[in-house]
Length: 337
Image (tube, rainbow, N blue to C red):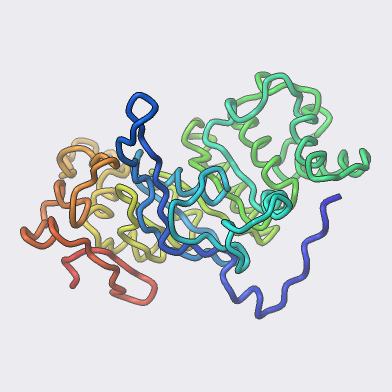
């Protein structure tokens, strides 16, 4: 049976819950399945901490490496280099038993709720399965926890949903089941990988409010992965901007929204949907070109081929290190050196 989480001291909770230090995740390419043909450098030197009960956002366009980063935290991908520490322990050195316990502490909310739910299992079976896997043998206790999770995600009365199959639910209801499955083992971290991108606009706010309420109720740490900055301000305390496998800016959320420093962060904000109808026909200056190949990324700052503020002989030659412009607001850009 799943052991209850230990009560942590003030000194223990003062330390980060999760530490990512110079993380690299590279995927090897092979020609004809045999000879080495290079690497896809999906994550290439990312560093950040996640505190107990904190919500952070990882933002960036498709292909920037944010999903590869999250899958490494979940233990699906193996780090090529760098460290991932959970409660001070390096996950690279986990035993099989350690991994089993760790996966009970890290919940996962997938992007596509319909694809995340097995179509041949009803809702009761889907929510009960993690409890069985992690040793909850008492069927009465399993049923109690299933119903409790459904009440917390507001799928009530539970009896109306327990015997249904995923295809019988709406998209919003399916995502609530995914969230219930993620919290049923009472984890310390929730990884939410674009949890509202597949939902109708009218449902997105409800799901984000639900996640925020669960975070506060259970003191969860949440990593919210998204490409949409318009939803970040309602959900996160800090935001990390990723581009081509690098973290280019880290800041408290209001700092980034009001005074973005990196040209790529400014471009992301410019691309955010504007609800003001008077601005519907306003032309926005967006970076030209496409994100670079992660097999052969550009030298120096990886954004320099698309950056209007590029300094020739510097941005295209040397990779900028992070500089802290204001407390907690860090940017990797030669404009601020």
